[in-house]
Every structure is written in C-alpha cells, then in structure tokens.
Image (cartoon, rainbow, N blue to C red):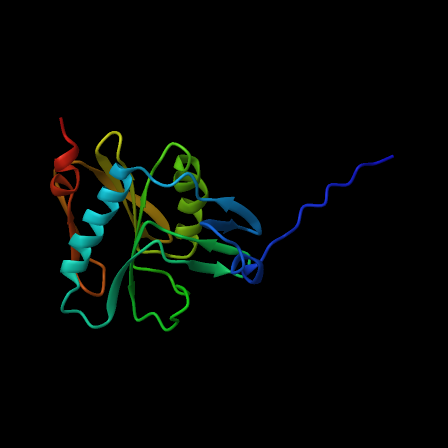
Length: 181
C-alpha cells in the first residue's frame, strides 16, 4: 500500500489568521522564532534610523521594519528593514522595494542567503543587503541585468545607494561601532 503525504498548501488567507511571527515560502509556513537577539535588533534599528533620516524630506518613500512583503498569494516574506517608494497598498508591501536588509541569525542564514536572495532577485529588488552581526560586516548586492552583482563587504565604510528614488546611504562603521571589542 502506498503512503500519501498530505501537506497543506497555505495562502495569505490562512497566514492572516496565525498568531506569532511567520513567513510563507511558496505555501510552506516558516516560524520566525525565537525572537531576534538584542544585537540583531540594535543593528536593524540603526540601519532603519540612518535610512529614515535619509528619506526624512522625501514624500514618496518610507523605511519600515518587519513589514509583510506579499510576493504571491502563497509567498509572504518579512524583511528586517525595507525602503519602499510609491507603495499603493496599506496592508502590506506589494511591489518590489528599492532596498531590503536582512540581519542574519544562525536560524535564518540559509533562508536569507538562499531562498530570499533568489526571491528578491526575481522580484527585481534593486538592492539587497545581508548583515552578519556576529562578524560585524554586511554584503551589499545591486541588481544588474536581472541578477545580483555583489558590490562588496562593508564593515567600516559608507555605501551610497545611488539608484534609489530618494538617495540613501548606510554608514556601516556606525552600524557596528557599539559591538566592536
């Protein structure tokens, strides 16, 4: 007798009902727990603060943290930091952000470097930044000809995101300063 696995394929309608923090990867639920570390949250906050200051006078762009980005009815991601411009929807992000930042933890590294990297690239997110809090550096990727091109590893430098509607930058020395020994 053949055994059949019945794995439910979840959608946004299901996702909206769940308690706690989740993401939905092609219909598969992914728990976002345990809660991020203090270092993780402090780094995400500092990046958000810097980006927020950069767009303070820009009426078309917003910097958000942990907001739902609905790529499809069965794919909802929740980036750590996001720069959106001219976003028409108020319930969740629907169009490709100009910049996404993911702060890696041991439990999310494969997702951030693999699944999300591919999804953000396919969605044509202009910049993707992967931050490594344990090593105090970030990798910056820029979309070029439909593929991510690594701009470099940044630890003490400032990176100017030239191809965003409202020009923004991140001073990585400031981001990591308080965690250097």
